[in-house]
Length: 221
Image (cartoon, rainbow, N blue to C red; front, side, top):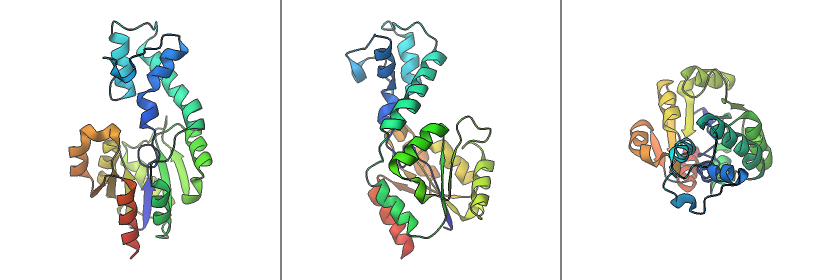
C-alpha cells in the first residue's frame, strides 16, 4: 500500500439519510407534503426509485417529469444539504488520522458535484488529508472508467497496482479491481442489497469505521 484513493459519500460522509428523503423537500416546496413520510407506499430505497414511484402513484400531485423532479432534488441537496449538513460517518476522522499516519499520499475521488464537494471539504476541514481532490460529476471520466484511477494514481507518482481504494459503491469497487487496485469496502445502508457482490469483489469488508481504523493502524505496525 503506497497510496490511498478515498471515496466520500457513504464512505467518509453519512449522506444517504438526506438523499433518500430528498423527495419530501420537493413536496414541501410545492405545497404538497405527505404526512406518511417513509411509510408512504411509493417510498423506495433510492432517490431515483422514490421519484419514479411517486410520479406513477395515485398520490402524485406534481405536474412535472421525472427528469425535472430529479434535477430539483439534486440541486437542492447540492446547494442546501452539502452546504449546511452532510456529517461525517461515526469514526471517519479517526480513520483518516490513522491513514495519514501511514505517511502515504492520499486523494479523494467523489461523484458529488464539485461545489458541493468543496462545501463539504471546507466545512469539515478534510482537504488537509489529501494530495488532491476531484469531482467526477459531469466529467467524461468517472468511476466506471479504469483510466480515471490510472490518472489519479499517476498524479500521486504511483501505479494503480500500488494503490488502495476505499469505497462503499460496488460499481467503483469493480472498476478499481479491473484497474489492479486493492479494494477495501466499508458498509453503507444504501448498498445493503449488493452486499453479497461487494463481499465477492472487495479484498476486505468493514462494517464501520472502528474496524477500518483498526486495520489501517495494523498496517503501520
